[in-house]
Amino acid sequence: MIIANIGTALALFPILKRQNEGLALGYVTARLVECGFIAVGILSVLAVVTLRQDAAGADADSLVVAGQSLIAIKDWTFLLGPGFVVGVGNGLLLGYLMYRSGLIPRGMAMLGLVGGPLVCASGIAVMFGAFDAGSAAQAIYLTVKGFKKSSAVLDATPRAGLRAAAVAA
Image (cartoon, rainbow, N blue to C red):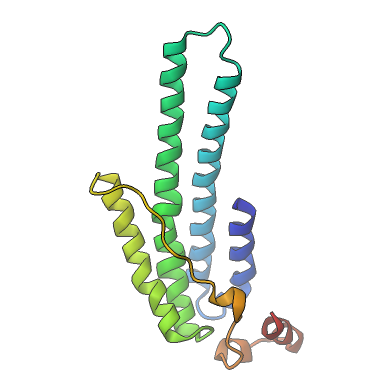
């Protein structure tokens, strides 16, 4: 997941920077921050597994407390990373860049612009105990359709080979 997050951010950066380099860099940064949270969450789960395997001769109560602490860290990292930072990075920044560039239909970009703040609000609501964490459907448009070939950003490509590669994807 971490590799895919970094890969998608780096793959989109050369195209998105043509629209707004600062926001494109902000998008990459948000994905890296998200990956940091995910890595800490994964490490905390691995630490729980290690505690469980090395439990022979240890005080059971202290192992339970340590395990609960590590699980709480995992819960918070996934709430803050995928549950909050995604709303800023994927929702607001990527949504805005896609809206302005015309790489995807405007309505789909608007989903990100509306969904991003909703993800952030949902994360804040979960932080304050308003409701439990849940899951949301993910858009698969780019996987199925790819970028719109008529986008002005793709027409502004400095090298013809890069445009052909982007359209073919």
